[in-house]
Image (cartoon, rainbow, N blue to C red; front, top):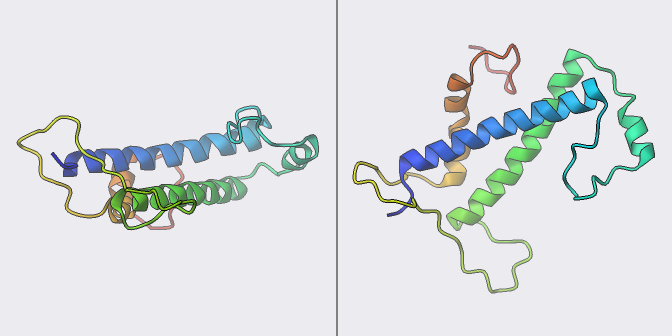
Length: 148
């Protein structure tokens, strides 16, 4: 069976949750804890002592916190969107050596009650942000500027 609409939506909602949670955790580590050992990419963290010292100078205020969350989330979303374009066959790897044959995302087990996904994953990704926002709960902050 092809990818079902239910599994596509579940995957995308989980991705939105991860983007938000990772952005919030990163900002907390930078501004509150001044801890940079959590960085996993590149595998050796990559920050020099001089870079860490500059990051420690960042003021811890709500406007900076919100701005950093949004910048980090946007970067993460861009990467996910490009990856979904590869899955959908609407994008091509930058380092393709003409061996790229494409990918398929399918349901592991068929479910006769499932409807096939009705759109490209990369298109559904941004559309499902608003669904994610409805189920995320009130955290007293948000990534978007949409007023309820």
